[in-house]
Image (cartoon, rainbow, N blue to C red):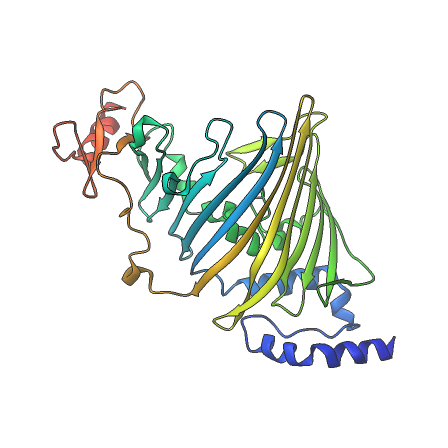
Length: 368
């Protein structure tokens, strides 16, 4: 055992020195008492994520899927995510076999989707050349405004959890909190395997967690690359939950949901390690339906702690003029629905006159 530890130290010493210069905590040598404690591994994982709260990430992905309803398909996309700890903007282009209705879409005709929370207003914009002749659709919701959908704006600042960078931060698909918090619940059965598991030359810690109402997790933590998740596998069954308390999905009886995330290559950026290439697999089945998919991701650019204001990171500057606008905070019965449009960064009526949104919201409050 001693000779094995010695050889591992020699093998990983150069990389360990690099990691100590990054945002991670110092690496614990194999065999150290605290390295065998599951909670200590989680603590190190959480500590290494604390400095990753402001970024711009760009990348691309390919999804190959097979479903009972639409058969086989391949979808391609490019994406950009921006986050500063509160404000968030994610934008993506999709083409190929997007869904059962949109198949074989050319890259030049790619669909566009953007979600933005600028600290005051939530924007959700979509554009498809196969829908409404390519006229864009924009939904808006201001915080503190009345209406059934105003709660959307409260969730918008946390929407990064469901993005591709959410997995890097420990928010597995469908989870509202990261594993560093989820696994420490009083009713969770958590253990660290006695032996490490080698993934691509690194001996990773392996955590196993049975989380009531969320499923069974197996997580490989990589101590060489800033305690990133090197691999995670999750299985959910009947009664297990995905999503937040206000917007959750409960797995139905006899249904099975399996997910996995695995990093194939790490790269160092700005003094920190990040996944460069990784894959996500999903398997869903219930009576009469089965779905298999694998999505391969590549991060092409990562910028830590950028000057978001100088970059204009959280501006709605990619919304097409003429896009139809729906104000989610307004009651559906109101005459305003369906007669708003976007022009040069403003909401206008069908005659092109700027709409005083504050006045409208104030009228609603007074009527209420």
